[in-house]
Amino acid sequence: MQFKEGKEQFIQLWGTLGSDWGINRTMAQVHALLLISRESLSTEQVMEELGISRGNANMNLRELIDWNLVYRELKKGERKEFFRAEQDLWEVAKRVAHERRRREIQPLLNNLKEIAKIDGKKDSPEAEAFADRVKEIQRFVGKLDSAVETVIKAEENWFFGRILKIMK
Amino acid sequence: MQFKEGKEQFIQLWGTLGSDWGINRTMAQVHALLLISRESLSTEQVMEELGISRGNANMNLRELIDWNLVYRELKKGERKEFFRAEQDLWEVAKRVAHERRRREIQPLLNNLKEIAKIDGKKDSPEAEAFADRVKEIQRFVGKLDSAVETVIKAEENWFFGRILKIMK
DNA sequence: TCAAACTTTCAATACTTATTGAAAGTTTTA
DNA sequence: TAAAACTTTCAATAAGTATTGAAAGTTTGA
Image 1 (cartoon, rainbow over the protein chains, first blue to last red):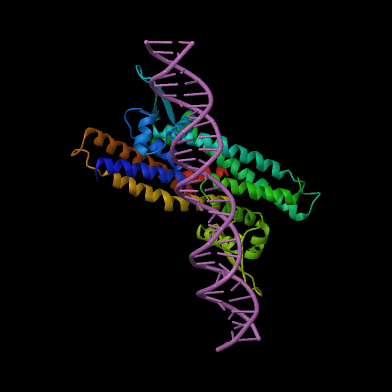
Image 2: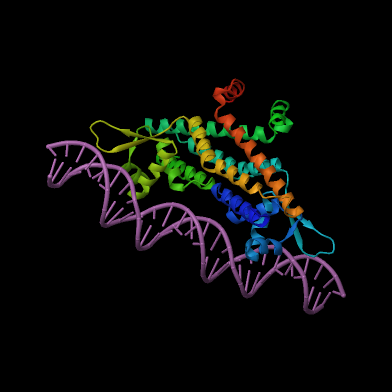
């Protein structure tokens, strides 16, 4: 396989991965492109390499910055902005986990809490069973969430910090 | 909040969760419905409760069975099939992780391996850097994958089994 | 202060994915 | 073996998402 071909395949692959996990395909492709670029790239370069429009490139670069996966960079003598991806993959994973927790899991937990509030006693036994079940789910999601948080913050924790070092 | 309202909200919520994670919304809703049903349900009942067509209900029930999240059940004196969801949430999480590993992560690793094969030496230094980067990503994804496998099989592992028991 | 360089926005449009429903297929019972 | 009960399939269509590109907005340098 040649370099150019490999590069393209990698970008496609990362894009597919994104789709599978609920992330906009183009956003994942832009991320892939920046992940394998040694230099930071301009919007123009991203448009060119991926064959996408200015609006699309701009939008997805913003989104990546919003996710803390890409940094804006200014070069002296250049008026336009350049973009560079976070290169440390462990950082990337932590930030994705952090953002998804914030955007999805926390609201989910709040909603479950609300739903579990239905008054089981005033209603049917079916309703009571439902309320219990929702509380159970709530507890479970809460625990999964804490586990993820523990992993994200593993470096700060002497015990998991050790485990992490062994695995890295 | 009343029972009926709570139930509907829960189903919507689980559906949204599914969308966020690359799972068909209706499939997640069917799963939600079965998760909170004490009795197993027929296709008819699923259609009725969610207001979806026969084809859609059938398709998503099959898919859930394929994911090992729902069981087919036959009741005596009844000709039609009934469906029941796995109730143990830890089992649910493990099976989702198992399926996604099998369907997405394993192929991803194979593809990365292929891409990393480009011959860096015969090409530019840029190509060499690319090959190294892909190998690095491959290693990282591989480690994440092993970590997930370890968690899935935690019960069989004395060390992580202990940690799991504490967390549960 | 102006205009060139650059970035952002967003309505129109294209693309992707999910859903319907009726027809075809299968199984069961009598 | 026939027909009723049930399940599956799939082409047509609807619904949901992403992309374009041109216009509007902003910043910079002379």
